[in-house]
Image 1: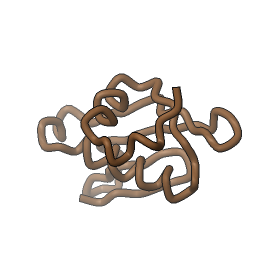
Image 2: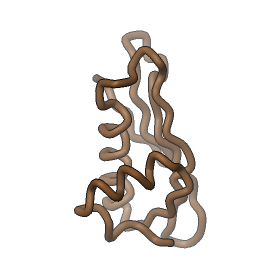
Image 3: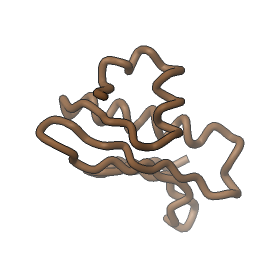
Image 4: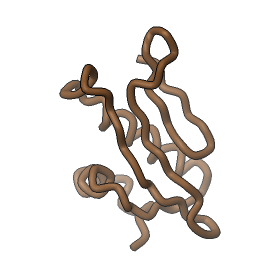
Length: 91
């Protein structure tokens, strides 16, 4: 699995560098990003890819010293299951 971390998203790339999954997070306000979308291609679903993407996104957001607003329903569920990142969440 190849993951690429960018300023405002984390991507899972296939063998041909095509995007097979992503978590998008846009700057919302000073020090806060809004996680707006989680997507995994149908061929990659059911293998934990979304969770791996979200974990990398959370770690990246934390490394930038930012907090996260959760507009994405998958992000809301993931953060509930991962209390070690709960300090990143703002309402």
